[in-house]
Image (tube, rainbow, N blue to C red; front, side, top):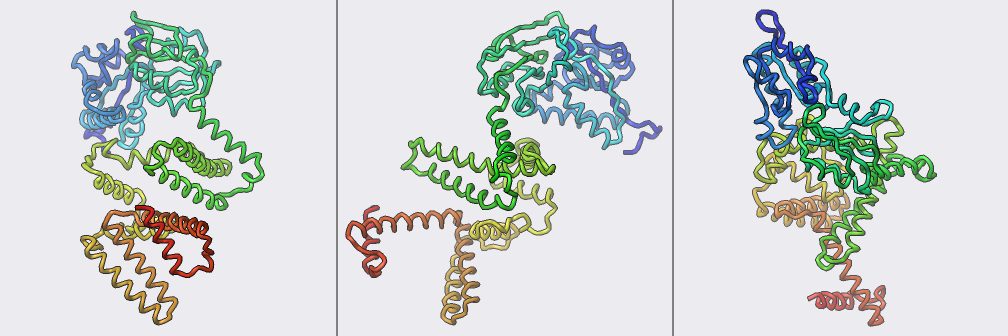
Length: 498
């Protein structure tokens, strides 16, 4: 970005309005407000906001963005974009935030990176934060007591594994406090909590309560925070316990110690298929009210989760990455791939969602071929379906199933010719072509070929098990029985299904 014609580079000066009382605003901050006439204020809902809004020339206030935006991330992004644009246009601007600019100010974090990229000077003035008053009122040394500062909006993730002491900010509404309370499922409810409200102002309240009642003591607002001296169980206790167990097994169990990423592949596949079986049982209407179905699915999902955790722990001990990197990676990817949820993109239906997803994925991966990213280790039917689907997106496909069906007949004839010729290699090739043609038919009629074949195989298995039972009842030896006898038994089983 080129400097202004007079050689002046754009700049943004960020000030903090302290915890609430105007007396806590520094002289340097007041002087800066008077000096910079192009002013912006994140929110006017603050006791010291008038120092900015009532100064000569007033200020741009962003409370309307809070009302219009659907998420806080959207609010912060819009404010940042507007500040950057205004700095380029006006040269020097002021941006005022509650408290200290350096304490839990997401817009300041965004501006720091953006200003580097945009060649804008960024000045951040020191300011008193609500923390200074909080420590005084609580009578604690946060360093000696090792207090962890947590954003209430990210409590579940930021406080994972913690038992306290915690100072939780951004608890601006009772529903935020309720969400925090529900995060710790193993809390007794009797754990002490101190609600800190409007610190340093005439409306200051300090209420000692319990974990169970913290969302019932006062009407929380933007000046509310809570202090949690201790919890009886860590936040996210169950997963933290599971992660620690995986580490312990890796360190102490002879079998776990011997495993590598490669040796675990068969177990990962096996556990995945067992989850599929449990999911199919879940969809069985005859077992709709069977509690064991949920128990089986819980168990199989746990087994699969252990495989994922096991791979992450191996990578962790190698110094490559941790399960936190895995969780962060999938979180951020899902946000990027859902611009219709977290951005300004409009998606009217699931087809449009998938189209957007594929395009974002293509750009992210820098892929040259439409087939890049399709795992060759997929089951063959699933692999064939994905290959056909990708080619279809580029227009290489029949318009409907009426074009795909005759191909099955054509490939069947070619397979018969190969068999009659006694050419084993050609027979293999033609059989593959026939299967691929059938997969294309399945794709056109909206049927997953993998699930369809699995269902057909299960049906055959169930019927033949019926044949085995009838054979035992009729004292028939299946191994020596003629095909005509087996056909009769088969027809009896089919008739019993009607």
